[in-house]
Image 1 (cartoon, rainbow, N blue to C red):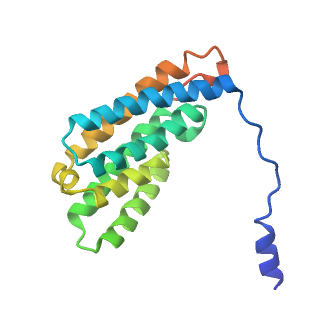
Image 2: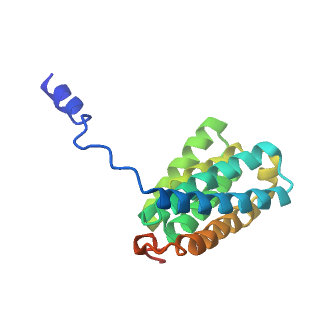
Length: 185
């Protein structure tokens, strides 16, 4: 009983919610994420994916936009993590789909889990990478037919667009704490 009590006590918060960011920082986050996702969505349109695939791709990159523009100083937001996390996870997702003969539920779990391990080992942890690995499994036949081309387009090109917009927009701010990136490689 004591062990359970101690365990449950760990779930009690020890801190208060941080204050809201100043409106100017929120505005910069809006501008960057809008431009980046607009460009990525239009890139997806150029590929002849089904609409459902476009939504998944934008979802994966939408989470990246939250990190790059909403928390540009976070380790997960840095170029190494953005590019490495998505690219490794895309390779893993496609490979798992191509080479393992299991049910889709097992493939999904394996792809995401292997992506987490690979990102940890390479110090490229980027949470949206898990969604990218999952896309390699649950995507339509259009995604599956791309095979490893999926890693190049739309994944790498989409990440490069987000990175480019991140470099431009985050460094337009006069606030030195918004400088991006914090590190490259």
